[in-house]
Image 1 (cartoon, rainbow, N blue to C red):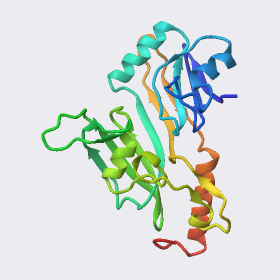
Image 2: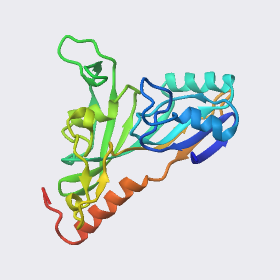
Image 3: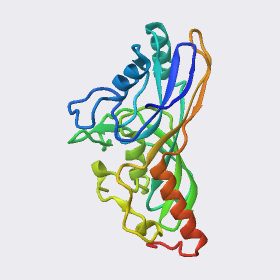
Length: 239
């Protein structure tokens, strides 16, 4: 069952689980995509307004009719949507930073920062550290543009890559022991990036949107371990 977070005026916001693609891709190894699952759950067609990466969890907005879909898609194209993400990174950011770095496609469906003389797509992300736990930090990311893998690449560019990200050089899962726990049970085996909030002002044909998605269980468990580690006084780099 896909959790429905909010619905009004021809729009529907759901909480996407990690590991589920929003729309059909080249591989169906993860089963039916989110749109197909939601249509089966609701017994009606839905239209995708925006997307998240397969391993990113959190708020995804759908439209329930074509007119609302056109209006919402236009609002996103105009940059009216305010998106808030939470990420677990290592090493931490030293402080808030605004990353203004255009992106270009790279090999294997990845993106990279445009080099000198390359004309990339403009990409801007505001990054703010919220909590620091020695070598790991919880970061708030606010993308002001909507490029593929934007937050992941900008975090890496800022020197604070995601704790796990197989596409960008962090393939190993994170265990409880690595976060201060006592066991070798895996806590994070996907990119710890969560779309925590989405806001859209009211416009002709659209209601105002202000939706939040709770932190998923894996990221919440990682934070609990990190906070306990800090409480125990072992919050040192490499700890």
